[in-house]
Image (cartoon, rainbow, N blue to C red; front, top):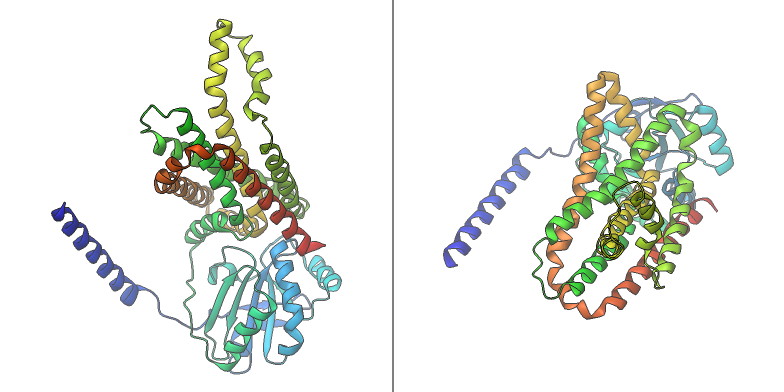
Length: 425
């Protein structure tokens, strides 16, 4: 045991040293923000280098129907009058289907008082944008000093602007990414998206609740297959996410704006579904029994089992089948919730890759989907391994775990509905 500990310690030290060398010598150093030239919706040229030495620049990456972008816009409006002479705010729309006419209409309806422009110079790749909204602050010297996703409050925005104006904010590194690197980062962003990641506790309690019930039913048996079940559980949820993005991506590419404008409404719909599911979990309804009529219908077209054997088969397999179906459905909800943050980048990545060749487009799609899928699978397996002892101790609390799972689903549903309300109502 001591030898093993020594070997492990040495290995850890070596890894730390190698990582340190990579970070210090190979990681790109802060550099001037990538220059660009775009034109705002009024036809005025915007050249980043022209602001150097004159003004702090705030690049707000967004699109018209993005709920999070709308929340950030409202927060920005509260402080903009105090900073308009010192900070140049530019909203950059990254969704190609948002036309100039629609952007002008959006500006007029929302009373936006700063510049709005379309991303005609591939800023999303130059600045590594993988989720929306993203706010990048560039100081007077031309160095990026802040890059963050989400919706900072007015007070947080004041702090960010004040540091940039005072010159006390340290330069940061913004990596220029190839279209394939952007596909990988966008795939990761779909999992950690601020629109969807708050749903993960619901997924976690749903999975752990199932594991706890399974262990309670098999107390006399040694369970060695929990990692395998975790792999399949994560795969089921990952397939749900991938399914949603493939469908949405295909529809947006074919139908364009007509579908893109409807994506935000998925959030409150999914939220209401989760609230209903959570409420039903407080009852004694066995969800897998809902599919029994279809199972019986299928039994009519295959060799019929004896009645007692068929009943046992349903009882043994119904819960497992229902469990993976639930995870797949939850994954679909997860993907639908994240669509508002990453769908435009997903479509942009695939579309731009297709400009190279069909194979480039297919490769970008595979990189994106596999990144999202692997993250869900890895996190689920880690969750299963780390929580094994905790689940074992909670065997006697099956009803409590079920109620906690139900409460989390309801809370997540309320979050999604509230998120939509704050953005649009």
